[in-house]
Image (cartoon, rainbow, N blue to C red; front, side, top):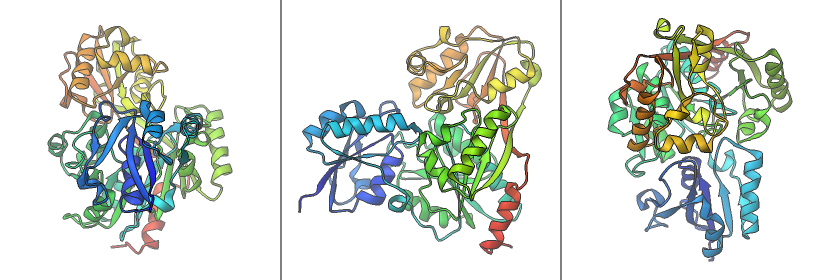
Length: 447
């Protein structure tokens, strides 16, 4: 039988999951390559044979996405599978044009082909864009469930940028585990807020094995919480789907893939950041929810910001460091640190560009929309060094750290700094507490 030749296009996340769930043991297809972008230094490697399975004893090569048209021709590819998240429809169709022009079919795999079924109740927390406040929503869900003495195990959307086989199944219970697994800043930003609260969180590459491990966690498991990444839909079939929307980017909920999929399949739609967005923007988002997901429950929430040492930045010249992915492919100009600076009345927000070192120069050149803030890039040791050098070279009185993790734990900062924290605070009824209490009763989880 002639197997259809396939290339999977992605960034070390959804692409590997699509392969594992749909293609790995499917003898009708031969995945001849992955292509990658967005993530530094991942191309030129292989998806290892240990993960690829018996049909792929040599593993599967990973190439740069720039080579896609040539690879389609060279490898006689029949089909290309798009597996990115948080991308505009213009970009999706742009890639489809490249693929079709090279002679191959263009495919998007949906939930039916890729979602795994758990033997535990699953709550998914997803978003329509990167940086909407999904992680703070996931934390609020966990805290509410813990109040009912339920054991919650979180599973995070993948970010495997190192040794893929070693990252097959990862369990994080302490901050020390982050170091043991050589986590990047992006990974620490997602995992650290969980473990700092005493929550168990899993991640990795093989999400069937991860699900089995989470269901059988040694500390116990009553509920699986899917902590989604970017605007991807859940890898696990949810019993309760929650999607977070951002009125700072009104309209994006209907213009980005697969964020609109999350919106159209959600049970609960949370409009976050209503305290810092305009009433007009909130109304646009609310109307779009009613259009795309008319049966969903709408909750409005504030992203409540607190600062560790506000006196250290009031009236000062400050450098603001924000969550990297929110600024880069999330296309935001500012973040929580910027909101805190405005509210507290800093003297000046300095432009980090004159002090940018190494790879951060390229980041600013590539993402020209970024405002006067510094994205916390740190996919490897070199980027961490560049980030540290940039901060320490900056001509400012103090640094505002708007990232979800304690940046001072992984780099040395030579000037005063303070951290910004943000939590979800619902301001409308119904609210998450009521939704979750109904879920607990429906699933007979009352203890």
